[in-house]
Image (cartoon, rainbow, N blue to C red; front, side, top):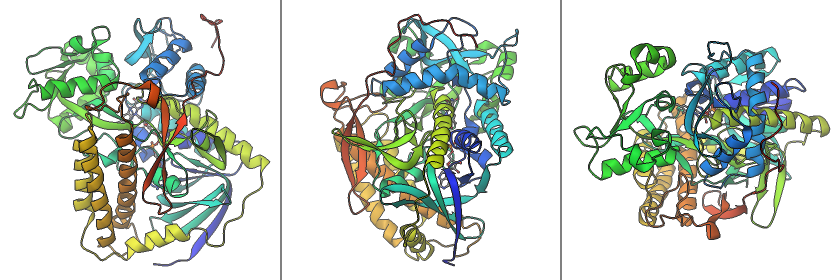
Length: 589
Ligand SMILES: Cc1cc2nc3c(=O)[nH]c(=O)nc-3n(C[C@H](O)[C@H](O)[C@H](O)COP(=O)(O)OP(=O)(O)OC[C@H]3O[C@@H](n4cnc5c(N)ncnc54)[C@H](O)[C@@H]3O)c2cc1C
């Protein structure tokens, strides 16, 4: 493998071409020379598969206010979100939707031509009194519509794209982030991007679980790269298990199905959510629905040969309605469950769906390095989207709040990175810039040991699913951690069969697996030390929330060895940006 490196200089480099990365890029490109680096062609990023919608208190179908949206977001987060960020996001949401509409996002419409809205889990009117129609959507392909629109806009703004480039190392000089080392998957060549500002938008990491709804790229690379350079992963222990993954496959059946009237049934044909959440029933927040489903199964009321799942019934809303509003779901159920959902229920199980925490940022998307005593912004480093944590989701994200997070904080990251780039000169590269990433690449390119991807990845994901899943205990998580250490050791005796430099996905998988083991260790360690239950982190041995000891963000750093997680904490920002009286002054859109 050649070690010739090609050098590039940009004002802003965005790593990741999902909704967050593309919105950051199209904004930054309006001000300065901006590049996007993506492991896959931009429109293959995971955002493409988002189905149900994007939240905003537009109030197109019934009265709604951003205050109610903010209240739901804070409550849904189990009070772990930063309230300045929650205010920033929910307040900007209506304007953001209009901005997306103006650049061409084809939203579904009401008969009068307004943007259509549907109810979604945890979104309520009048501070929790009743469900409200807040999710704007483009049929059940909202992410698809969004990503295509943002990609076209980025191209029109003159963004430079480096597709199928894999980021190997984040470059830092004297505390300032100044670039990225990348590998061109197409031909194995190396590139260093030296930039005034770097935006990470690398998406989530739920591929570390066996049953998950995520794309192949969602392996936590961004987190691993940032942690290796001394930055932290905030609230690492909180994952969201989406209640309705297709049984056996994991593909997502959007909550929009329940928004349109779908209900969950157990083996007795009982609509069991009436028992667990009498007011909002099947539209309760995702952690509650996932745990309720798991409980039904554990208590013997699961369906099927192994009594190990539940059913999602939607046929009662009528075939025409299903085909108009949920055509993608009809197809998914047919292909992956062999079920025609206009006639029969879909077999479902909770599926690992979303990483609630991420690289910590302020509400203006600047990456934070901090602990309980102090916090500081990292020069030149911004993050947005699922890999980041502003933090608006805290311990549990509400459905449709992620697409909103992507575009709001993506835009802010783009603006702030451009502003930073225009005000600062470029930080030069260190003499040995990229040497760590290169050494890691060569380690795997030359790996001729015993273990291959399948064996290690299989054990990793099975272990995470059973020991770090919906219900957790100290004993299970400690067992999980020791298995992860064993897997890590096996990575030193790894084998990459493909020795070519053209589309060597065997090599990329090895690098991703190495990152997945690191992030799995980090979140397991964080989960062991959080001795309470909150949002997506539910412990059988500590079933209650403990605000006295744990109303704080976890920050997982790495020790000097760049392998062992060190868990620290940081204060939750409980103060909103402004204190406005309610109801607010009417806004005209
Ligand atoms: C099936 C599904 C349905 C969903 N539905 C909804 C919904 O209806 N509403 C909602 O609000 N949320 C939804 N979500 C959540 C939401 O879609 C995601 O959180 C969001 O799309 C993540 O976007 P992102 O921009 O952060 O990253 P992604 O879209 O995941 O993109 C990550 C990018 O990073 C790049 N990348 C990663 N690693 C590297 C590397 N090492 N080098 C170079 N590039 C790299 C990839 O190439 C990719 O371009 C859904 C999620 C799933 C999985």
